[in-house]
Image (tube, rainbow, N blue to C red):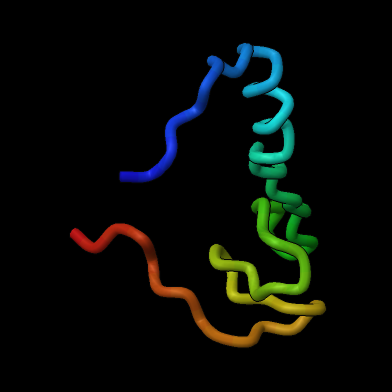
Length: 64
């Protein structure tokens, strides 16, 4: 059986330990072609453009 702590750690000590556990906010930029938000240095998922050129054709989202 592993050793157990002798004293309870305070909430402040626990929270200071967890201070670096938060996830950073995702950085997104606006696509110059269609205006949708996308990750920088990635192909736009809405229009398929990258650096002003269409890399691939995007099919319509709804097929009815």
